[in-house]
Length: 425
Image (cartoon, rainbow, N blue to C red; front, side, top):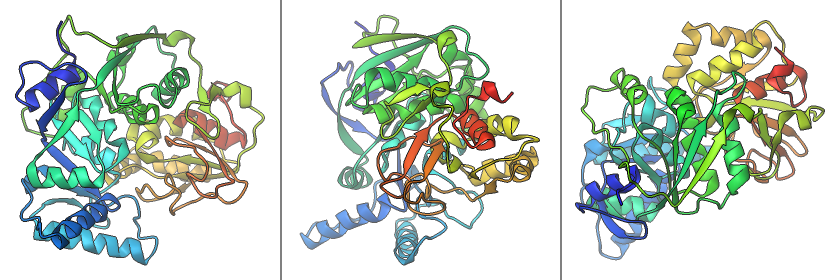
């Protein structure tokens, strides 16, 4: 039997002719990312090693490492400010040039910069100090999140071990309705397989619906594979991939694809014609129902942001619904990167949002992770384009978050209740 795309990438990276699920390989890593939360944690690992007489020395390849300031910017407190200072000194000491600093032009959420800046390419092994590193697998790369100790090892040696994951294939077919977004599709999938349905497995997406999706919608699919416990999410690269990247990088890359006779652990088939706009109720991404079942649920806040729901295509989708209308609840829109913010201004999207009554904020993960820039109070209900909704995720432990697409969130902002976009247009 042949290999899947994930197996082929790991076999190349570990100099093996063939790998199968369950094999343990020592793979060379192409790119590494840390941010203002994981970075200080990695540095703490290095300090502990130094105390034990094992100084770090130089990192393996500064050109293949990049840093994002995204979780606690603008600095929410003194600790956050000190973390950025610590990160800056460490980057300068180690000669890391790709440091996307808040307040210095282009910056944004790490899982957005990875593709927006063409930092990760098809066929590469990319690891990051954040669980949603899976996002970038939409480019046809093996992208996975690692803990502080593993990232520290990669920074020192340029390689790490992986157990080759079994691949689950999700074939999406049919004609996707205009009101159905990738967020609806992935919520339905997670509802079916559960938040542990892909534990340490690959979730690979294929089918005519995937072929027709623009890159930013594909990124939503792979982003939320994390919520199903997957080791990585991936989509085979094609003309959509090459067209997207040619505007972002001049580097050559390898378009690896699964063998025709690749073996998958399980194949799931979905007819997207029959899907409806959906929402994940508190307190799990698998607690999914169609939006119209909740149409009388009143909300206190609508949030359009995060690596999942604030890409340029997400903002365009929300703006189509908000144009010429007024919001009835507190509504916040935070573009996922400074470059996206600027494009949204040029396209008039920001004007639409502001005229609707929404507040526009700087790129940050703050509200998504319940840290700052719009946390929820006790008893508040929010409908959000983000990816997690467990107790306390976006603020008070007694607040509630409903996960939905940018179109559903925008429609709900207008009515003040959870609303299907078809009932607005």
